[in-house]
Amino acid sequence: MIRFRTGLVALVAALAASAFALPAVAHTSARKATAVTVTAGKPSEFRFTLSKKTVPHGAVTFKVTDKGALPHDFKIAGKKTKLLTPGQSATLSVTLKKGSYPYLCTVAGHAAAGMKGTLKVT
Image 1 (cartoon, rainbow, N blue to C red):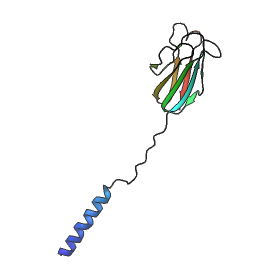
Image 2: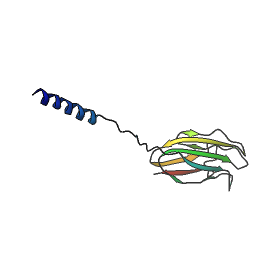
Image 3: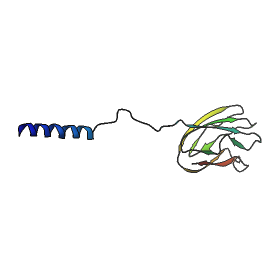
Image 4: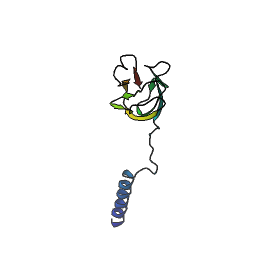
């Protein structure tokens, strides 16, 4: 009877240990940020050109360059770059969920002149 009880205790302990064991290798599904190049002021002064108009949800990094003759900035999802003078660049990182996100230049009159658009996030 003692042998049976000892064997039963050992079996229960082994089962409990295996039920709570952690996997030896953890898998992560992290992916790199999606890079989007944004050109402000070219081909016309009051226009943005984006390298991608649709991006996957998650981290997105915008590299914004002012190639126009006037200062511009870039705003999306409540974040914006500093005011860029012609020839300057800035990087803006945001995390986006699925949906549509309007972007624009916040300099007075620039969005009304056409410096705006919508980025689609899948």
